Length: 480
Image 1 (cartoon, rainbow, N blue to C red):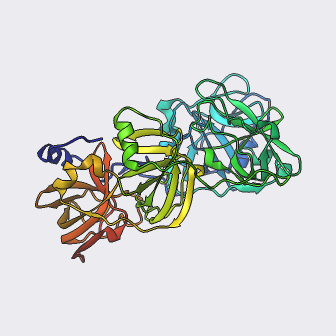
Image 2: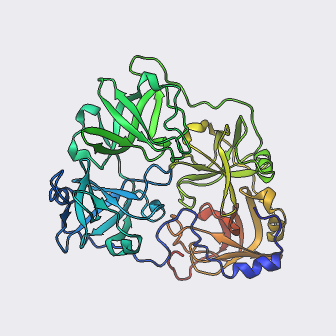
Image 3: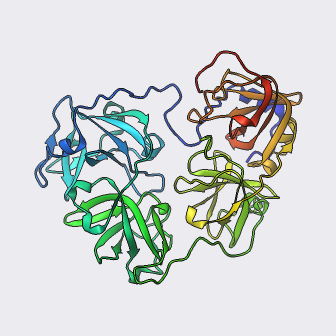
């Protein structure tokens, strides 16, 4: 966190800052994406080129297949592999690079240029990659990724195919499915999904009310490895695979498990409440400042001040504020908590950390109790100088700057700065925010936003309404 930054020094830094600093990595500004459909075949037709158990099959020159990414390695459940699917099926691609979701996030369309690649299988699961001995497939080298994987547009996350375990067949391998009436085996209740920090990947049996079963593969390196196995029933979503003759499911993050209802025999269920004593957000900040990185028993309670609808906050982040301060809540998956919602967030054992300077608690939506619509806190009226001098205390809270001016570009998404008589500060708007390309008012304005840090100080605009006053009517422009 910024302890204190002299305005004159910060001003020198800000001239080099773009408002397009990306807090949830996506296509870099200025990088073109493939819009035209250049595919020559479907995933199912491509998979039909290989016979299970036989040597890897060279893919014919000129073959291009497209698909939408359904895997996600953010939580550590997938490693150096990406799974894509189209309307005909899905396939796993082996790639020698980690953190693939920072570029190829869920819902992104990609085109696979298959020249020089093979299609084979590993114990029955068909894969694409570099040629290797026998039916095996090697990972595409890091240096060759750009030659084989072309980014397309963000299409939107795929809705999982809702199935019962008796419906599962090979046509569903490497696709996203949601298993209905699911629960973990009785004997697993009280255990964790995996054994964290080197305990090894675990096989956990999930069954449905018809008595059919599937193996859940849970990595000890996943963020949710130490999460307790739910005692209730409901649904579980994941990417279907096979190992030999055993069907397996890999969840992308803990939120893929929704088992708060009763089990098939009527027992279990519950959830949705957070217990313990309330902890002030300022106390969480003080703990971290003194070297503590694990949350205390209890919960924080506050109002959501970020706006998920405007898409100017990472899809896994929200910002909440109580009477003592504000903080980022980082989930393991996308959330839908709207601005103004009052929430309890469990802090028992959660990780407290910084990401590029922004303090956050890391949890899952299962650790949140929704208390309904709350009352938004009144934004603190302050000058730019005030904000910089009180940055630590005010980080992740709402401020309002009067008699201000925004300069730098013609749209909200350009590299803009807000200034008043006391100084200047960067504003931040994502390229993908719904108001990014809207015309920015000129002249004297009132600006409301969230005090934020992404290596440097900035104000995050929640939506277009955060800028009031000024005049519009000039030319348009593109997002930054």
